[in-house]
Image (cartoon, rainbow, N blue to C red; front, side):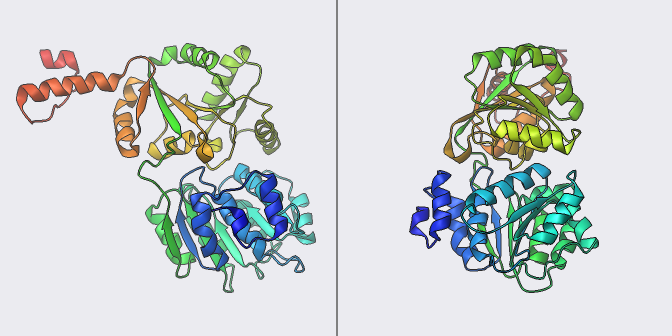
Length: 401
């Protein structure tokens, strides 16, 4: 379905056209009538599905610009998501009088409070900063019509459940609540039960869990050879933009210092940088002034960088969901993308589980260690019937003794 087929004001349609939005994505087409009707919603949607616009377009239409009050509230887990979300609202509401604003840790409170006291229609916030203003009596939710919890599973992963429940309890009147998540752990079910009223439940998570537009490559190697192979790979690929993920800040710093001499347009980002520095790097990467960005998982969730052609896992991800969110920075909105993960001996068990759970078709650069193990398993099965092969803890040599 096209956006032009909906009953959307021409001012919003014009902005959507300028942004290149013509056909609705599945999550937009499915959720639009529910949100427009004012129903509560609990939605599971994979990364890169277009759920930000799915929320923003009907939310903007609910705002009365004659009323100088917060009417839409959006809660997200990170500062970068705050910035991205409010930027999306600015674009879609560009031809209206709606004033969106973001508040988050690390930004000047005096500037934020001045704007909050002046005029804000849609507030996007991280939980910590939002609590500060609630406790300080700086903001009021008395006119909130719609509250959105985006990336809810990530919000709760960092221990925000009680904070979120308190924030939502401050909206005393009847209102609409929308909850978007990529997974449905027990904490999300609790939050949905406590904060949503008779919600519609939809799931747009496919069995693959990761977009089919992504090719998943793996390289099995000794940790000492990773840097050489990374540089070789980067120089051999046609890279539009690339994200390189590390598991910790010090790893980001080290890798950046090790390879910066080989590449001019490279930057790094993690939570240890000042908010001003992070925002500047984020903005330059969005503007395609940075080609290679080495980052911690501060850049691995929800951020929409539309020109990323490659993602590299320098360190093997801590779990299948982290893998999905990292690699989901490429291949967005149906575009093709490549993900390369460096794998060491200690990662093989986790990798088998990942490939099986996410139904990934793996492409190997060099040796396929899983194929070697499968060959041994088939030989052992033929030799001993249907009894499964059990690897000796000492390896090949241990079995031969």
